[in-house]
Image (cartoon, rainbow, N blue to C red; front, side, top):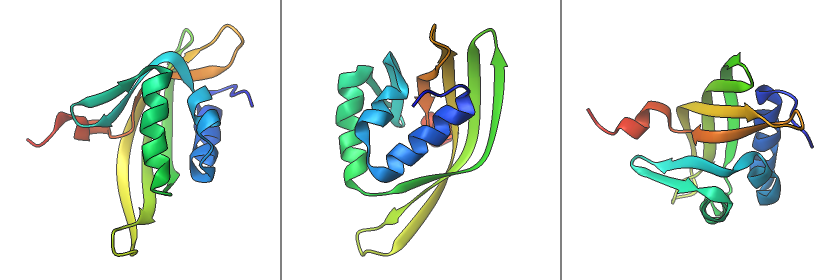
Length: 129
């Protein structure tokens, strides 16, 4: 499935995440993409991304966009998002956490949009004040 806009790319990857489809998730990213995995840590390139997403998908959580905004210029887009991660905690209680994400997309020669930099944690990467 080809994403013709950054918004479409996020819709596709959210459906893939919620379905546990790691191959579609990985296709969302450029070959040398970097993803913030937690404050101070990143995964870079498809091999590291595959390892990271295998661990994340094992938790069987789901992602839902709440509000999004895109700034685009000359084939590069900044995607801003308020999103929610929903899953079960250690006691099997439903847990919902809200985040603010920033993702940089680049339009590929094919016209498809892929993520180059993905910070799903937003300002949390800065750590405590």
